[in-house]
Image (tube, rainbow, N blue to C red; front, side):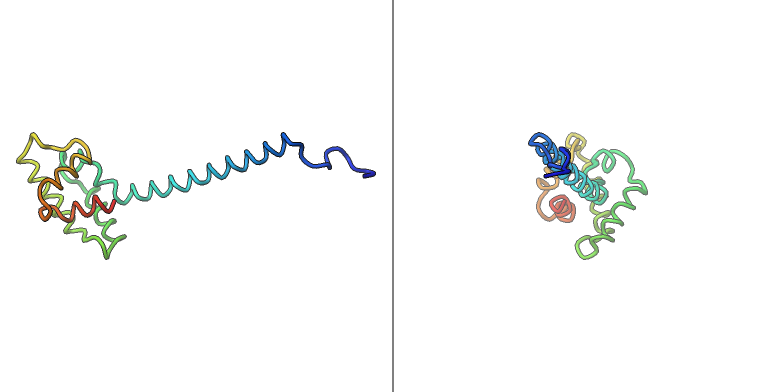
Length: 131
């Protein structure tokens, strides 16, 4: 058309591919950020249960108490914070009597809970399975 410049003609094939690839990469980056935010949220709520060294090798501190209180506040119909804390203490005492069975990972801890019998650490088992 008269008066039309080359840059007004639209994108070349290479430029169009570049534009599409950039939009795809932006969408992937946004999805990764969204999923990371979700994982961080789950970790902030349940992560203290997976830190076996902190739960069983050290005295329970205020951070653990705050974590189980926050968990029970957020899931107030599903979790009872004091009951969970009492069960963690019971499990810790049970593990103290079996030094050769002290778990080194959360998987070993869950295996110990399940092997102890269905009703002994029911609350902890449910929390691990919920997570």
